[in-house]
Amino acid sequence: MTSVTPEDFKGALGSWASGVTIVTTKLDGLVYGITVSSFSSLSMEPRLILVSLQDSNHLPHMIRKSKHFGVSILAAGQEGVSAYFSTSGRDPAPAFDGSFATENIRTGSPLIAGAVAQIDCELEEAVPGGDHTIAIGRVVGATFDATRLPLVYFRRAYRALNMDGQWQ
Ligand SMILES: Cc1cc2nc3c(=O)[nH]c(=O)nc-3n(C[C@H](O)[C@H](O)[C@H](O)COP(=O)(O)O)c2cc1C
Image (cartoon, rainbow, N blue to C red; front, side):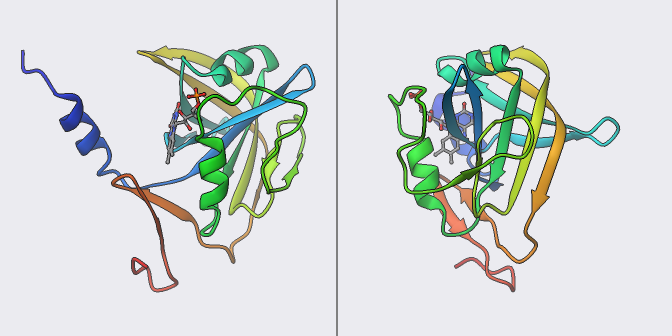
């Protein structure tokens, strides 16, 4: 069997250009969230999305209990928000201490203000996936701002699109 080195795995997977999302939940009055690029649309009927969350982190365990989560698709210029939510060692707290605002739609999961889109979900299913949990969300609220451009992540760096679709 051919073994795939961590470098080849990361290099190949890092070639997938993605947006950047913040996945959050609220449990027993405490909020928490992490930066996530493994987000995908899953189903139209019913309206489902999925995210893949590493099991060493608080978030999949909190979501299994709270039964809801929010996905905010970050806008160009929100790199600082992504950096905040990808910092290790943070714990659930009554409020986030970063310089950004949050909003609620329906479930109480905090959604990032100024994002390109905000997607509020009830947990449909939590499926084991290696050292991650695939959280499948049933979308119960969604907003978007068609005037904003997305933050893009490619080859371990943040990128931005301009209106002509060129790399900046
Ligand atoms: C651009 C970017 C994308 C990420 N995507 C994911 C992801 O899809 N799933 C995940 O579990 N972690 C992802 N992470 C890592 C988590 O954000 C990070 O491990 C977490 O916030 C660190 O918390 P901890 O070390 O305290 O567990 C990503 C980080 C960055 C910067």
